[in-house]
Image (cartoon, rainbow, N blue to C red; front, side, top):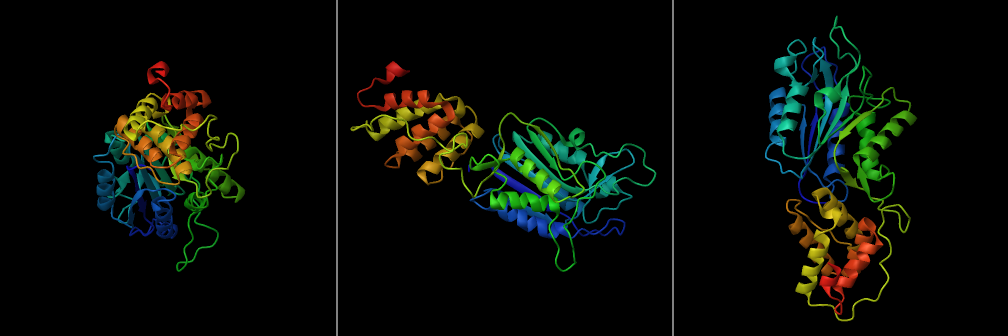
Length: 369
C-alpha cells in the first residue's frame, strides 16, 4: 500500500483515581492491534502506541499525530479507555492521571480531538473508540443515556467506529485475571477480522471500514455481548484499512479479482520502452479510476495481484502515480497483459481493448484518442 498510512493507539487501563475502575484489556489490545496494523502484508501502517499515558502526554501525541499531514494520507486513531461525561453532557476520554472531579483539566476532551481533526489536511480519518460508557454519567446528571459521538466527533472525511453508543459495558472478555488479561470483545474482534482476513466479506482482497464494522458487529452479536457497535461515515471514497491475508477469490465474478486478459494477439514487435511508457501514461491518466489517490491505490493493489510485486505510490500527484504504475507493469514480461486486465476490471473490457489498440505497433495512437 502507498505511503501515508499512520496509526496512533492510545490504551489506558491503569488509573490513579480510585473511582475509575482498572481496565486490564487495553494492555493487551494495544500490542495485538499494533501488530496487525503494522504488518506490511495486512495494514501496512506506521504505528505509534501510548499505554497508560498522562493526559498531557496523550494530548501532545494526538496533536502531533494530526499535524503536517498530506491531503491523501490515511490516519487511524484508536482510543481504548474509560469514556466519561461531565454535567453538561460533554464527552471526555480518561487518561492515567484523570481526576473525575476535574475532567476539564485532567482528561482528553472530545472537543480537543475534534479540533485537531478539523485542522488536519488529511481527507481520510478513521477514529476507533473502545470505551466503556458504563457509569459515565456523574451522580445526579440529567439527560439521555446516549453518548452522542457523531455530534461531537463526526465530520466530512471521517469514519467513527465505536464499541457502543449508550451506557453499555464494553466487555473485557469472558474471564479476566490480573496476570492474564483478555482483549476486549470489540478490539479483539477487530484484530481477529484483520489477522485472519475474515472481515473481507466480498473476498476482493481488501478490507474496508464498512466490512470491518459488519464483521465486528456480527461477532459481538453472535457472542451474546451486551453491546452494539456503531458506525458513522462521511467520506467520498472507499476507505481501505487492510489487505486480506486470504487474498481475493480466484476467477469468481464480482469478487474483485481481475478478469482474464483481454483477447487479441500479443504485439510481436512493440514500440521501444520509452514510447510504450508514454502511451501507457497518457492512456491511464485519462481513466476515471485515476482521478484521485484512493482510486489509484485500489488500481495498484489489484495490479499487484497479477505482477506479484508491490507498487509504491506517493499519492500526491496523479501523473507521478500513473508513471509508477506503468513502469511496474513494463518491468514484467507479460506486464502489459496484466495492466490491460486490471483496466478491464475497473473501466470495462471496451476501454482495455482501446488501450491495447493504441499500443500495437501498426496502430495510430491519434486514431484512438
